[in-house]
Length: 247
Length: 310
Image 1: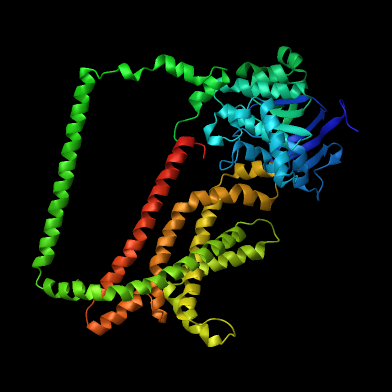
Image 2: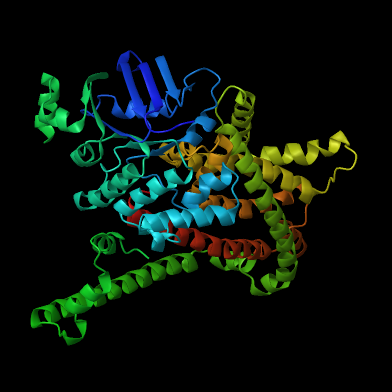
């Protein structure tokens, strides 16, 4: 049914406001299977809001969100069902503090997907093994470094076998020397063909992971394109100004 | 316990294992304190001795002054005779202790019901969405009502009102009705404690759980409530101490508990010492729970300091 080149996520004219101020002013975006799209832009440009709208943590004020062709922005969509198809990783890790790493990862497979404990734990251990975290399975989150916590959070999102992974500023809360390990994990995911939508200030994501870069400014797509082109030859004045501030 | 995970993790990320590094640098066995450090330490020891001496002498002085003032007052011999009579106290002890057993039974049963009922009310009150609005209103009305009513009124209304209904099959013993009154009142307090705990769990925890596809109910059960309960353990024990001493009020309805037993003895021998005995027993019971509360609070403070994020 699906394969490389198919649209996993389509955003059509997404609009969102808080009170009277518009945060998103008509965003159009298509994510094809197996690609990584990185959203860049200043704080308040709407990156996180856009991700929250995709995951239905926010309701949009106009437009359409299509996941594998299903309109998930329609009234009557079951958000719990949609969220089973979309994995999310947040800036602040948000691991459950009273559960071990293994229990954090098996939470959704066991409680949502009704997988047996044995199978869920076996799959979780395989995932941890794959990302070099096997020895942390029985540890509690407060015994891990920020980078390890964030990698566990990514593994937790993967355990539900999502179609699409949303990463919201996943390295912003980390000390600079811990950014690398998270970046490496995300690069690994990309090479395995995971479809991802990433909001980030971290230029490493843009350079090493992005297939497609989208520059958001004041709730609109100001400019988008392949990373080499956008970084080297930004067409818009606002893009140039933003890049010169952060590079 | 409180070692930050950072140090070992940074080394781990670089692919270098920690122990070898530690072994090659730190050699505490060869160390002898420098003269400067020795002087510092002896100065610190002197300061410690000085504050210990000061604390002891000021406590002793205070005790002497209070003891002198009380024992020199003209009424002290009479007060001592009627409130601190050793013989009367010894004679009353078995009756009062037997009464205290009833207090403990009521406490144990009420504590279970209070925790369960309080939790249900708190969960009902924190639900969202239009369907559960009547639940929220009911829960809010319940807590408002029973936190506002003086407990003695609840006790009297239930203790004397319910038997008047002549409901078939419902026990009408004073201990049972007193227990019902205690449960109703304390559940309201405990529900508020649980609610505070639920609301103190960071919204990002809910967002993360919902993002994993967990429903509202599952998010509450597996993610929010366990954290909420851990947070409010200390205030809950505080309410438990309060419940423990308020079991003494069921004597108002005529149950023969420690307070009532003391009252009966007092009336027989015209001496108030049995009340003091009952009081001493209640205090002796609450002290371990209070100390446990302090210890738990200290532990959770340490944890929070260690993890920062929590």
